[in-house]
Image (cartoon, rainbow, N blue to C red; front, side):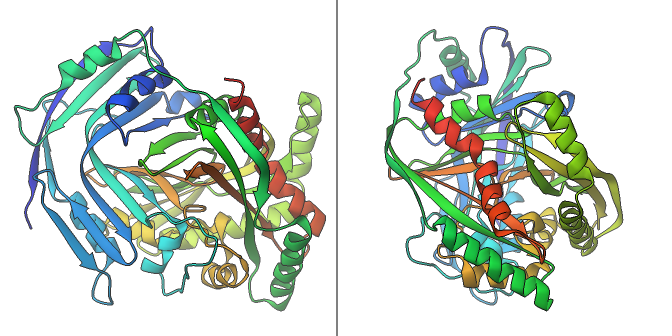
Length: 468
């Protein structure tokens, strides 16, 4: 297996007069297929970096059961997936084909693969059938890239590092990037929504799905089932304005804008899919949702009600147990470090826990990803049966929704958000989706309203984007 040596150059600059958004505006016109990662974290002191990545020099993409890989020397490979091909192993081997040289040991993201794994990719990790349904939005199941250039912005210190990972050591472009950042002007464009919002289900149809889910729970097929519905909005102009509005309306632990040319994925996700740091894996189950009122005192009262609500707590406990089981598949020392913590977001109040476990030394990070994918908060429990019922009842393929997006460095450290509160933009149409965790005692009207509550920030972002 051929490996590629990447020579790493870097430069530190002051950032007291710039923002991640203004830098991204300057970068994106010169370097298409660029990405932006930010955080408006609940625990802000832990997440004080933003990242802009551009100039992809290698990639791995899975689409139509074919794994396509590109490399810095211009070479490519294609592998048809069959029973002898392990997608987990192929992604792991891809990350091991790159060697980086750097004279400093940075404690933040500066190399690795950035991208996503869509929900529909679960068929590569589990023995489950996921069909391509009509009226679905088609994107690759898996798409990760190695980027030549990364800008890491430290908001606490008002400084940034510009990185250039060069296959040819003479191809250092840091000077050009620095000059581009210092350009005073940048192009921006308007956004306009067209026609009315559409959905793949009416409210009454969704309520019928809640009834079906309750029957399966009452029969004992599942303890919980997460069924979802999709919305869409046509538009003209620049969807980056929607991201700008969303990051303001709903600051979340994971803010991201990934531009793949013919489609874009962007959102403000509150929930990690999986975090792995030096072999320690974390899952943060979010389950239990009340709508915020806009009144601080009333919200505090609601938070207490949420903590004591039998239905919401039963749902949360099931998903904490599922996270423990998932991490136990290739790990040990599994602990619940935080349990049923109330967290406030722009439109909703959630119950959040933190489950950790130490992965086995012989286990790759990608295997832990497969063990825990998708998040139980997006499927239900038991997970395998819940996913079979999702496949049976949901009218359109989930695609990106409920998958994971983020980065994994070349040492196996991993941090991905669940793709919820997230837009897929393709062919001048915004698509977004949300579900509800349904149990035997669910109320049809309440579960229908929960979907709207979760998507309140996204709908508002479209409206605000038209005013930018």
